[in-house]
Image 1: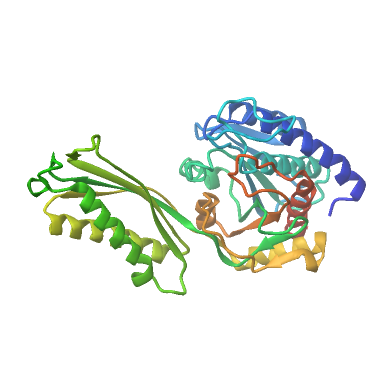
Image 2: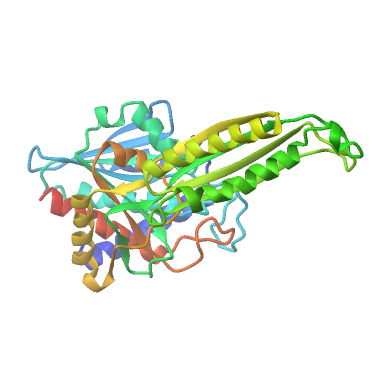
Length: 385
């Protein structure tokens, strides 16, 4: 654990970095200013730095201990903001229209920078740390893109860790659990092509609105009648577009939605049922129904050994009363999940005061910065001692 005076000074720096990044937010794969700031700081502390990794805005900093070769640990932070308008009155509020650090990635980046700075002058460990500053988490594509370009081949990691602010966990506490802590995410689109007609002659149409309504109703039974009640899942149709006039039955309709699941098996089951419901509707109504699977990410699944590492580190830093063991999983999704499919690791919640992320008035709780940094540093000290 970092001595109190050192952490106090580091906390001021992390806060200042966080406020600067917050003021100049950038969307996924466009984090050019943020990446440049990260790379400049890492280089100033003597880390080996790779920028624009894989043609993205990803930045990887590598620090080797003074005690020789050993295992390699990856620590990851996400850098991107959300495409939404900020509605806070913070002095450092976003200067960019409809771009806002409404999820806390500014805080995650500042924490990992603080960890890198501290460890750059405390290298009495054995092994290697790779500081992974990842783009485009909000798109659920940044992590998989780094992996596709050889992240773990060029920067081998024996295990990997990440955190996320979460006001479901009280400020000053850390929450973690073995197994799935966040859900898989699938997005889908359903296109219906019927036969349009004058609204006064519905018998001459194949009404895509009726077909779409039937599909929406049928999908409500997928979770309740196909998924094991002990396995959580959510299926939501969030958009239904059809028609242009009050007296015309349209030719087409389009539905879009999302599925959240806690296991790969349930994820595959629901995707199969989505296709089957669409095929059944097409046959029943005599029209075209096309199911399109748009995007997918796996559940975020923590390994047992590495989760115990997080627990031990948090207990050392905070005391056992401030570690939320078996924290509740959430139906939100996270593309760190792709990294956890490649390497054992753990993703933990950093408790904070304030609103839930993605709220227009959200602001990262600066008081949680030293907590996150201390836990990361303790993980390194325990694993590479």
